[in-house]
Length: 133
Image (cartoon, rainbow, N blue to C red):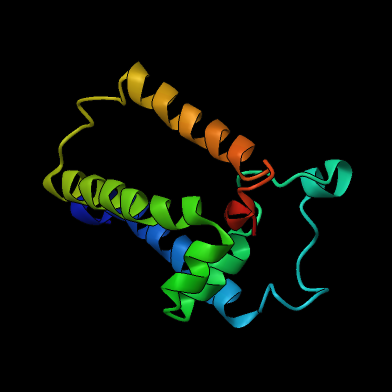
């Protein structure tokens, strides 16, 4: 195996896995009961977690229905460009044979955690039902 192929194995595997997941969720409709398990947090507490509606959002995005995807889980839709940008940077770095030179700064990690926790809280408050799946 050449060094270029070996360097690109990680990004290629991640892309293949993402394509398989999107393909499967796009083909097997999560809006129909019985295909996927209920969110355990929702089942136990009755409250929506930050990920509730993500399968339905991915299904909608797979069918190019962005408005429905945003309606199901806006955080999932907002994460897609960030994940794509991160994957593209990883692929470019791997193709050039460069090592990772930085990690996310603590403020970025804490900000992301704050956004997720804030979304979790807000989607369960009365009056903000539009954030619920």
